[in-house]
Image (cartoon, rainbow, N blue to C red; front, side, top):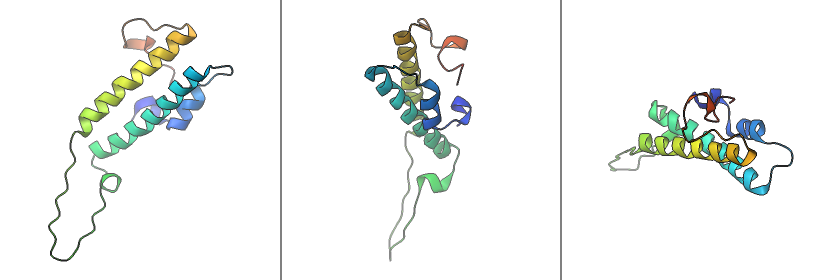
Length: 111
């Protein structure tokens, strides 16, 4: 996924972390990193990277059915969660991005 310029979750955590962040902000930042990693995996699934989402082991006389459901929906939900967390971090720090979560003021511009 091209989100956050292809940074890993741990790289995003490093970029967002500041000395003196309270526990509440550190927890939000850690969750942002997890979401970034999750979105990268979902992107691999959505672009058809088979080794990411399947491992097929066949048994004797077995029928195998593989389904991938709702990956796009989950990716959209994760993106929404990411934007909300970034906005909450910005508000806590006093860099309120405002009501809108778009444009250059959405907390993603510096990533």
